[in-house]
Every structure is written in structure tokens, then in C-alpha cells.
Length: 95
Image (cartoon, rainbow, N blue to C red):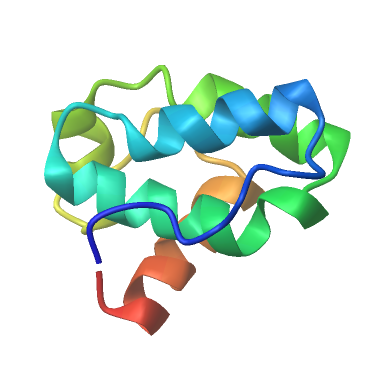
């Protein structure tokens, strides 16, 4: 898989922007992890979860990748339910 399989059609502007940003992180590993998660879940995220995702994607790729792979703990201000969902999604989908 090299990119989004989900159309942004039918999404509001906020979700479209987040979907794009999840697939255009800067490192391929993070594109695949966050992009696949966004493809699968972006339409059903609550407004609070969208805010959490907006906050989470500000974390630099190396730090976020290390936290998602369990190498380091994520800073408490980013460690939330959505982070845990993304981490579980990654394991389930063997990104």
C-alpha cells in the first residue's frame, strides 16, 4: 500500500485536512501507521478525538514512532485514548 485507499468525499474540511496530514507525515513508517488508521477511522472519530489527533500529529515523527512501537513512553499530554487506539490498530494491522 502506498497511499490512502479512502476518498475524502463526504468528509468535512477538518477530517479531510487530518486525513491528508496523516498520509503526509514525512516518514514512510508514520504515513503508513497514521494514514491507515485515518483511512479506517476518520469518519467515525468524535470531535474530542479529532482534537486529540490534531494534537498528536504535532509530535515529531521519531518520537511518535518510538512511542507507538513501545520503545519509549509518550509524554503524558499526548498519551490519551486515541493514542492507545492507534497503537492497538498498528499492532492489529501489522504496520
